[in-house]
Image (tube, rainbow, N blue to C red; front, side, top):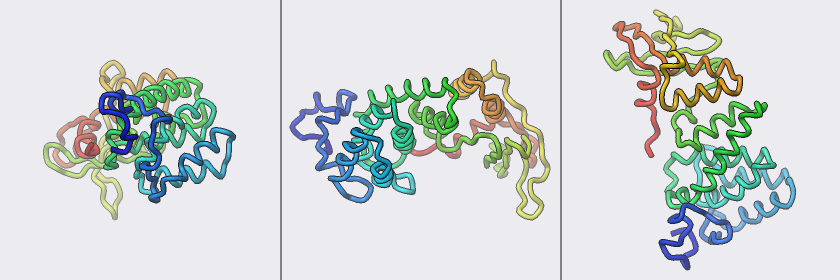
Length: 262
């Protein structure tokens, strides 16, 4: 167990849903490069001042390029969330760690111990979205991950130039879904001819949305993000298969084929 072994199971941070930096045994919290001493030192530096060099090294040590996280990543998360109130670098690094939480990191006890910090992070991100910031879309993805919508956090685009590959549930044809500046259609992708046999998508009505699609749409509308809101109605709408002519729900088929294994 990577937490201080002096705590019993009932009082441990993971059991109580709280990972307090003061009870973390950093000697067991190795980072992406196997070191155990650098992350707490770097956190102390950025807590004292906005040290760009320390922030760069923290990012290098807490998230590997292939989006892998390690014990030190989750051990650092509560402190990063506290810093996120005043630091965009902290908000971005905390958001990246949360987005990686669906991966095979082997740190489920540490992730559980971050429950309170992630709840606090959700509130912080939602307030930030309401301010309509320049980093709106990145923050939107962080919030999706904080809501445990890891799949959509990983694959959602900003609908400027988005393509989603789905399998028709009726004939198993590989169908390309375009939602963006190139159009809003389903097609069969031919690598020589491009997208052929295009068929217009059937967007969902806002009133017909439910679950995460409804939440995403309502948040985008609330914040005046018209392009994002419109794209969501298309992504959670229906498409016709160019091969067999059947109609299917885009989001359902895409999620069933691409949802990460927890």
